[in-house]
Length: 189
Length: 206
Image 1 (cartoon, rainbow over the protein chains, first blue to last red):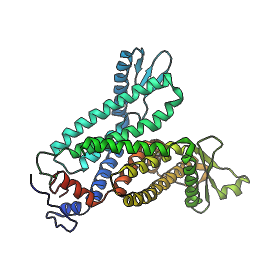
Image 2: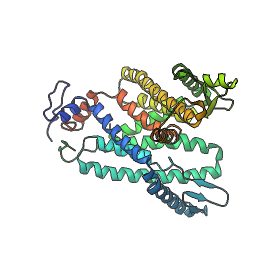
Image 3: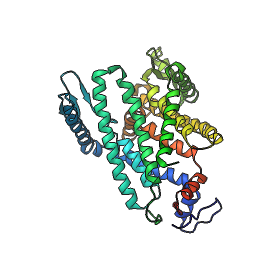
Image 4: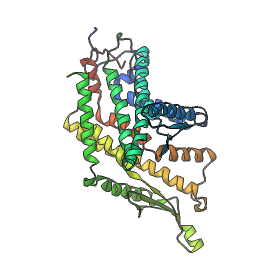
C-alpha cells in the first residue's frame, strides 16, 4: 500500500487544472459535483418525459410489490395504478413517496466522490437496492399505520420516514467510502 | 473504533438532537414560525413599485398566510383586495432546519467547528428559506393575474409552477439541500486529508 502523499495544505499536486483545483478545494469540489448531479436529476425529474414515461410505472411497481407483501400479511388488498385498496382504507403512492430523491442523493454523492468507476457502480447497485427495499418497507408500514394509528400517519409520512431515508442514504455513502478500493487509480474517475 | 460503531454513534446522536429539537413542549416550531415571518416581511415587504407582501399567522393551527396585493389596485377598486395562500412551514422548513442542526451537532468535529457550522448553517438555510419565499410570492402573483405584478413567459411559468408544486411545497428537496449545507459548513480540507491518511487512500482527490 503506497503511503498517502497529501500530508498538508501546502502540498503541490501535479496534473491538469481540474485535478489541481479539486485537490486544493476537495470539499467544494465534492459539494459542487454532487450539486451538479442533483441539478441534472431535478431537471429530468421535473420534465414531462419523466412524468409521462417513468413516474407512473415506478409508482405502479411500488404499489404492485407492496400489494404482494400486504397480501402475505393478510390485508387482502387490490392494486390499481398507484392506489392500494383494502376493504377499509386505501393508500395512494404520490410523488415524493417513491424515495427517488434519496436514491438520487445517494447516487450523486457516490458519483461525486473520487473512487474507481467499478467501485462506485458496485456500491451504487447495493445502495439503490437497499433504498428500494427500504421504500417498500415504508409504503407497507404506512398502509399498516393508516389502518391502525391514523393520527400518527402524517407525522410518519412527512417527517419520520423522510428523515430515515436521508440518514440511510448518508450512512450508505459513509459505509461505501470507508470500503477501500483495491486499486489507487482514482485519477479521472 | 470500527466503521459500524462510528456510523451507529453518528446516527444515535442525530436521532437524539433531532428529537430534542422537535419536542412539542419546547415549541421550537413556533419560534421558527416567528423567524420565518420576520424575514419574509423584512425582505419582501414591497415588490416592484406597487406590490405589497405580508407574512402572518393563519387562523388555522400550524399554518401561515402569505398575502400579496397591489397598491394601484387598492385605489382602482376602493377596497383592499389581496391574493393569499396558506402554507405549512413545519414540515417544509422547520424539520429540514432541525435535521441540519442535528447533522452538524452529531458530526465528529470540534465544538468550535460545530458552533461555526451552526452559525453558517443557519445563515445558508435562511438564504434558501428566502429563495423559497420568493418562489411562493411569484407563484401567488402568477396565479392571480389581476394583481398585475408579474408577466412570466410560458417557460418561466412552468418553471415556477414546477418548483412550487414539486420542490417548495414537498419536504424532499429542502432535505436534500440541508445535506449540502451540512457538508459545506462542517467539513474542511484537513478532514478529507485525515480521512485519506487514516484509511490509506493516496491522493484520492487528485
